[in-house]
View 1 (spheres, rainbow, N blue to C red):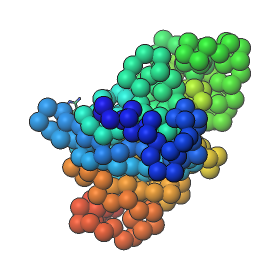
View 2: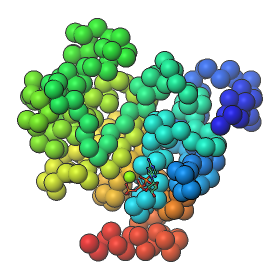
View 3: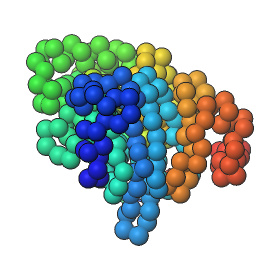
Length: 269
Ligand SMILES: Nc1ncnc2c1ncn2[C@@H]1O[C@H](COP(=O)(O)OP(=O)(O)OP(=O)(O)O)[C@@H](O)[C@H]1O
Ligand SMILES: [Mg+2]
């Protein structure tokens, strides 16, 4: 952890003389040699992952392999023990205002939608922009309505979360993240709590985002989405990235026994 700052100021390689606060043209997310433990449990083991601008990376792997922990580390919801994580060329901030800015830059959508139950959908979407980004209410509402339209629920703006279907709530959660104008979006099994008929409406929104050039890290077992939208599939097992390949190669030609075994299980059920 302590060397992450040193690494950045040194720059390294081609960017030696580029000041660290100038947005680099390099990768948007870099996870370097990251390790994390929960007590005795070594949940991330020397994880390395590079996500380019506009790239969509699908993370797949068995339960307990560390997928959520990896996502949460990138958003700094979980601290790491060693290694470094850079977003847009900068190491993750520890706390305070910088951390709030990071959370705005790195949007996150969870399996459970985490909407505020006592606020309308529109209020849910405008809250962050007004409180954190200090946008004017009218401006935030205008953009929120555009986003709600984009995810297909503009007509639900005045309702409360409990009045929406699961798929609609998840699309509201996506709009809420987008309202912060993030540089990258993390999705942790966004469709796994949804009834089958609602899964596609959420995946369609995500596919649209991918087409529009959003950089995305998506934990999902939805292979159709991976094939349609992702440039890269990363397979995790036991806290390690075991394989990283194009969706086509990964799904038709997995290299490791772990991946073959895993795929045989998700295809057949
Ligand atoms: N807060 C925590 N405290 C202790 N152990 C944890 C904590 N969070 C996760 N773990 C453990 O870390 C390991 C990795 O968990 P993680 O949630 O990242 O896996 P995952 O790949 O997302 O699994 P799933 O597919 O079930 O969501 C698991 O063994 C889990 O039990
Ligand atoms: Mg998980």
